[in-house]
Length: 267
Ligand code: APR
Image (tube, rainbow, N blue to C red; front, side):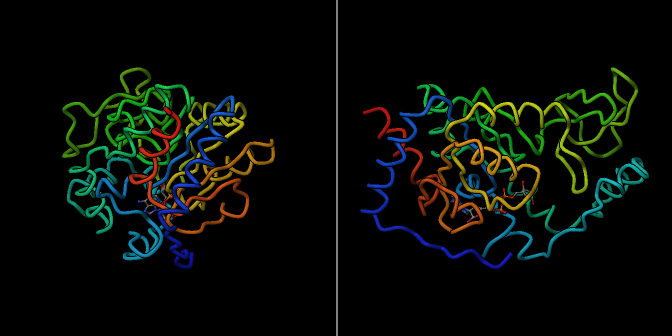
């Protein structure tokens, strides 16, 4: 993906666009937020694509992570324990370990609390939305603080599990356990995809925040919402594949604009 054009809006343009977004949101019946890596950039976590993206820096990882894991789960854990992992994982993991929610995450929690956003679907695995207090949350690419059984789908928190050994088999069905984070080549767990689709089918407004909208099936949800007549509103300093189908595109950052959207909606 070529580097998206960074369009940073002028303060005047941001002010009037936020007003416009607030109007659409307050006139909507069911607003679903959908965030991507850009939502956590202001928490110090690098995005994947674009100028500062991990894939831009290290190249896109191979897409058969999940098939490697399924072929030989204990070998996969052994390689991970011996830190035979890609440098982008090390950089991402260090950023994730020290990240905290920023004003934008707390603003989304406020939008939910004041009834201006009914649910949030996040592509991020950083658990920052949960930490910020968002409750109706669908983590479509999983949550790095959880383990998941790939046979029955049971999820448990990492708790005191440290990946120095392969985790025990699933307590519920004796199945194979992996990190909840969805690997490349891994299908989105059925329960999560079903829940995300159900939210999108109810939405008449979708807030696309900090996502390049390039990775299916998550990104396909935007087009499904659009086809059903929902307003797509984008908050992203750069143009994306979504921009042309948006009712409004605000070229600014999540941390800067979401608190101002909360303010505009509480007046
Ligand atoms: N505020 C809002 N948006 C931002 C900010 C910011 N502060 N900084 C960057 N962005 C935008 C970028 O312009 C870009 O469009 O966030 C977007 C990040 O895009 P990606 O890195 O492609 O992230 P995402 O869309 O979440 O990728 C989807 O790809 O690699 C997989 O599993 C990974 O969940 C991820 C999926």
